[in-house]
Image (cartoon, rainbow, N blue to C red; front, side, top):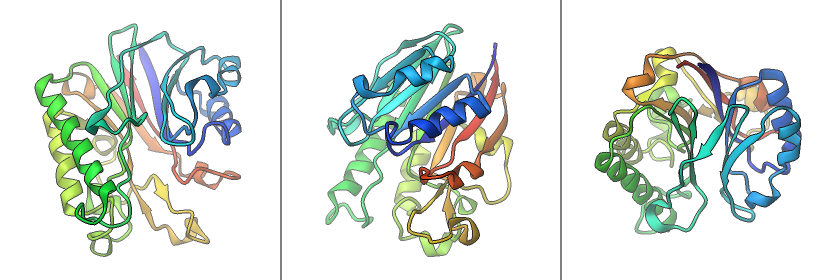
Length: 262
């Protein structure tokens, strides 16, 4: 059963309901994973998405912050959600397709501005969150699973516009990259996007602070698609829809796509 999956930090699903609908109409992914929905589950505008054929949803939400949702036009059942680091945040939800594949949708904490947990509690929370993800994967290695989301870390030198300049900037510091690598290794996860597009700069986020984000191109690859080794070979056609960042009143993230022949 081939299916196409997309992941997108939408930065308010209610504010950008129209953009979600546009992406669903234009691109038609079978599954769309959203992060930073900033909405209680009962206030997500599901009727709009159902009218476009996305009749299945699993989600975790909270008012004004965080929030994750998986929209699907394929049958999907709730497979749980974890509260890593005990933050009480809606940052993870999992759904299982009829073919047994489990899709994990994550919104890892951004980590604040200073990469030092002694002066910045949020940075410590980010590292603790990743550590608990790692430990969970070690305790119960995933199978036939896909992990997507805004992981808020750009791991490779060519995942950021300037490696040296960003080494002390949250999202690309060595300690964050190391924590993400341990998490990935613990689950045996394959970075599907980089398996498909192994070389060259690749970004999925551009700051709102840039007056001309497209020309400046000071991007980072914060959004990821991973798969377990037993299904990673079925993935292909990875792409980042950069143009979506230029839509009217956009999110600062662009959607990341991959297709799986399963």
